[in-house]
Length: 411
Image 1 (cartoon, rainbow, N blue to C red):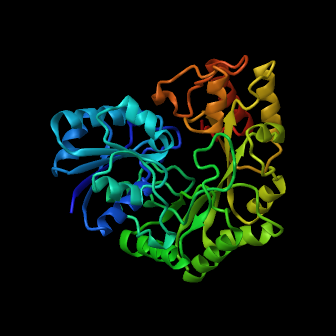
Image 2 (cartoon, one colour):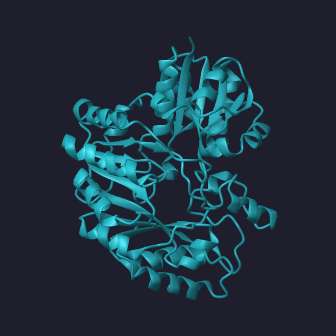
Image 3 (cartoon, rainbow, N blue to C red):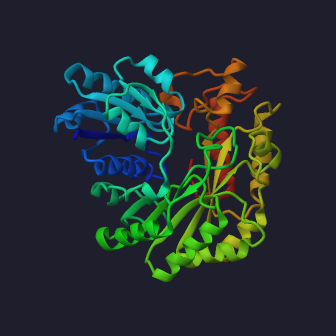
C-alpha cells in the first residue's frame, strides 16, 4: 500500500471571463484517484496555485505524487515537481493532456520526473506504483471498471460558475464516456475511440451527487456527448425517468442522425439546458481545412433552441491561416456567424497543442513561433499564420463577440 497525493494545477492566471474554468473539478484525476484507492492505496488531493503549495503536497509524506497537466500549466507543474524532488524522495509521475501526448519530451526536459503516463492513466499509474519508470503506455480499462469519482467539496461550492440564473449553485463534473471518433486536427482527443460507462453507473453517480452533495448543475466533460446516439437517448430516458433535479451541460457536434428533433427534445426533458457546440468556424470550408468532417447544420441548432436548449458556440480564430486580409476575413466570419441559431459564443485563439496533427504540420513548416508552453492557453497566437498578428486576432475575437451580441462578452 502506498500513500499517493494527486495534484491538480489551477492557476489564477487561467481564470477567464467564463469564470468556472478556474474551479472545475479535475474529473479525470478524480476518477484515477478513486481507482488507485480501490486498488488498496491511500489517496489525497491538492489543488495547487502557488510555489508554496509544495508544503501542502508533502504534508502527508507521500510515497508518490501524480500531476495532471495541460500545456498551459505544464511549466508550473514541472517547477513544483523540481522543488519536490529537492526535498523529498517521493516518486513523481506526470499525466494529462500535455504529458500524455508527448511523454518522452516531458521526461527529457525534466529528469527529476520518474514517469509519464500516456493516454488513460489507471493501469499505467498502478504500474508506476509498482516501480516502473519512463514513458508508460498501458491498455485502457473496461468502462464498467471505472469507480465513481472522488469529490473535492471546495470545488463543488463553485461561486465562479457563470451561467444565466445559475450562479452560486453547487456544480459537479461527470463523464459518461471517454474518447472521440472524430478526426479534428487540433484536438488532443481525436481518434481515441468512443467508450461509454454502463447506464446504471452514470445514473447512480448523478443520484449520489444530488442526494449526498446537493449538486444542482452537472457539466458532462465527455469529449463528444453525442458520440453514440442510441446511448445518449437511453441516458436521457433514464435521467428523465428518475426525475433528477439537475441543470446539465454537454459538448456536441452536429451529427444527430435522421431524428435530431427527437433526440434533442429528449435531452431537454432530461435536463440538458445548454449544449456547447463545436462550431470552430461558421464557414464549412475552413472547418474542412481543420479536418472537421461533420458538417455544420443550422437546422440542428434551431431544433435545439425550439426545444428550450441554450446554444453556446465554441469558436476558433484564425482558421483561414493564409487570409490575404485578416480584417476582411474576420468580417466574413462574423457575417456567417450571424445566421446561426446560437445564443452565445466563445472565441478561442487557434492553438496547435503538442502531439496533434496541427502542431506537427506547423512545426514541420517552421511556423511554430513560441515554445513556452504556458502561452498555449488559447489566448495567445503561438504560430506564424500569414498576415495574422496577435493584435489582429485580439481585435477579431472582440469584434466577433460584440457583432454577435454585445451582451455576451466571452473571449
